Length: 412
Image (tube, rainbow, N blue to C red; front, side):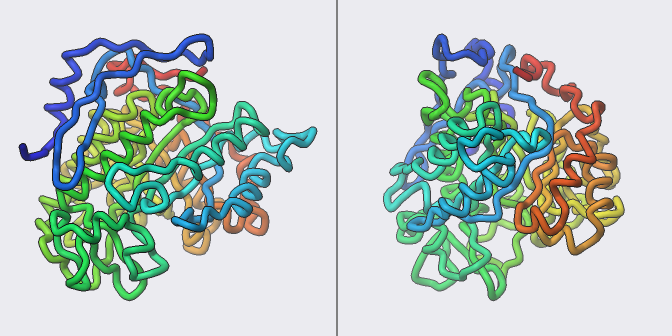
């Protein structure tokens, strides 16, 4: 059976079941939605059939969030640095008498490399690093929120073994590899590598990874998964922009690559029906600004948030994804107020323009409901002062209209 999960299929499957919204209570466990499982390549992928079902409220807590500057690798969980970041973000020191000294920073996002979670065999997951951060926040900063970003790429090494599970690299099912002896990856310039996300078998395994995270029991409380954990706000994959050293072997062309990306986002929404899904769409290999339009419109239709790691100023300098969200690109439709907009501000952005201009771009131009600030220069760049001086405008916090068909927003 060939695997090609698309929006029509997800919507059709959703009609087969009825689900109810979850309550922010520990008194009873929510009923999990049914799973749809298909076999592809070396493993099985399961996706939730309830993504488009009605009466599923989506967690919605607009605000400023801290974005980790640490990458969790297999064998290096960076815990001491991550713990220090969490304490710095929330203004405490883990169990001190002032655990909420930074009330305007309402959450924290960690970044995890794929191979730190899965491997060496398909479906062998280790959630210890994600659970550790979630447990620490719950114990020391109750009420603060958590989010997770997962990368299948590595900008620090051209060796794919640093980021991609071994079962991918040793199985021809996952397509050509750059070095000719391993599979399912390609080199990024002279500095890094990425999993072959344009390959349907690789995309299926990444979708399975997110589905497994969604159904994993959260340390928050008995009966909650990460999808239904009321303080697990958002999840995202890596950015769309890839600077290959050469055109990858087996590359399906821009159209094929976009199709696989669209499938991945659809599967993530299906697996996390209660959780904010960010699509980090900025640029496309061999593409142009109009190539972001169809994906932005498709994301909006299923409630995925328009996002990007490049929050530039002025508006014309924004990458292709945000421009299509604003309806600026030819053929695009203005999605402001209809679909969520989430800004991820990474350290290079701070050198591109002033902090004031980045803030204007995120809050005024993009109308972002959530802004994640990378913590590399948290103190020296004056980020906390900036956060405190620029609360999320009330207009940005309105529940997106596309969520109304799925039960609306849950702000508990």
